[in-house]
Image (cartoon, rainbow, N blue to C red; front, top):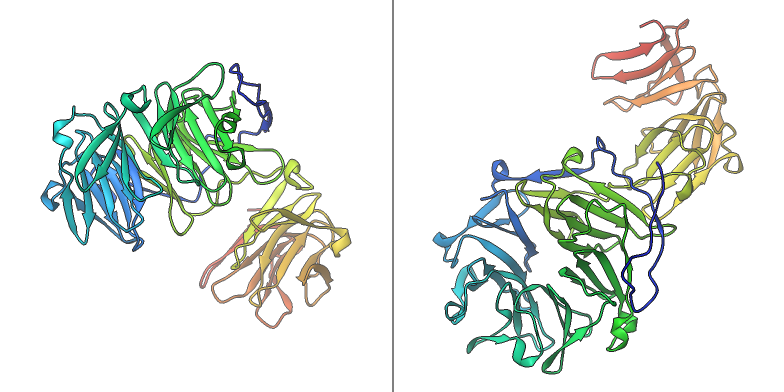
Length: 485
């Protein structure tokens, strides 16, 4: 992979721009651990606008043809027939009291509680403009971002606007969040605003203001998706005016500078939805690492409108015409020698039941990824041959490593031990280790095909004069790829 240097932004931020090197890891044909949900899986529309998760764990998906609610096995559609004020739902949010709020493209708002949708009065008196987001203030009062009416304050008495009269110069608000201090932050076409007591204050992001398309607030800080890359604000720099001390990225490796959706996952990675695919910025240790995904990688559609991380840790990306894509695990990983691998040649990969990822490398021994860092096993750990070609765990759960010149090794604790016949095949070259449905371990070697039938000893089955490059055992049939066919 070629490293792409990230140049500083042309914009001058109030603090220095964070310069870094990002490595694009999204190869065109690379596939990830994901599932895509669209019309065939029960969504009422393939155009997804927003996500939320309610207090009972149901996932809500707002689409152009109603809301789909999932219990994990199927989708149930809610639309006008269920009491919603519209079908085209553009914003959805779960309040602290468990109420689900829904905003529509025509500007109408409803709340869903105890199986009933209740329209909010007063929105019909305002110009029709789509609702883009919801946020509660520190007192629990709900607010909505409108693409034409500024910020709306929703109480039992109805809806009121919070716009020019109290300092919000823009009527088009693209995003709205509440930060860790309870302060409302609004993203508009002309920049950022913060609600300070009872007035909006402008947050200066730099000498050249830019359109704010998306926001994400958490205990770490504020993420700002703009029309020209994204910015970060550390919570420790709050409150105003120190809030203006941003760091940011203007990476040439982004597929487009337009960040339509932005989110920080619980592991610290930053996810960005753009009109040209999904971007993941790995932030854990070492250099930040960029992965760009599109339809070729399994994404439902290139235009990503919204993002959500559910209780299980899965990441959801809502697209314009391809439904919702769910990333089932943290599978977008890209390892090189920069991350600690001792060799760039990875010959085999094994995921063990406890979730560890093991990699056999040619020249670098065995590497283990625990979700945070890489741990290498080589001569210091008893693995005398660094040319590891294959890995497997036997029926007792012990790691076995087949090497090119040193035979078979077994991991006990944190050390490898060389196994001699009959505990290992009578050969120094092992090309493939496979386990069948009955737990037997099959070994393809330079001296034929061997099997451990379950007693811990290997017996040669045949093909003594052939090099067995690979073996695939089935229930009652074993296939072997050899040097002669």
